[in-house]
Amino acid sequence: MTSLDTTRAFYEKLGFEFFVGPVGPEPVAIMEHSSGVNINFILNSSDVAPLNLLMDVPEKHTGYTHVALEVTDLESIQGQLVSLGITITEGPVTTPNGESFIFIRDPDDNVIEFHKPVS
Image (cartoon, rainbow, N blue to C red; front, side, top):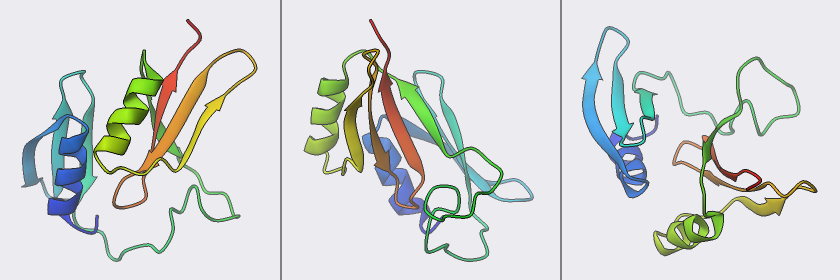
């Protein structure tokens, strides 16, 4: 993580609340959302990666690429993100079966998807 203050401010815009941190032998900070999503942020990284290792380089590495949050009104979410000054990095995209999604990135280039399934 490049900055706990910057990351905390970003996730607070998304409705997360700061819970605790730094805490533990490998220090983390924890934020929670009222929907039940809990995120642990690594605070002792050795350096700042210039790219998201799982998304932005041709060589593929083990791990998952992003978290997807299910929403019921993608258009409203998109408007809220724009009004908060959060850049939509991809989308909206609609699949042939009617699912739609948009992507954003946090201050450390972690990818977050907002996904509206078929109704």
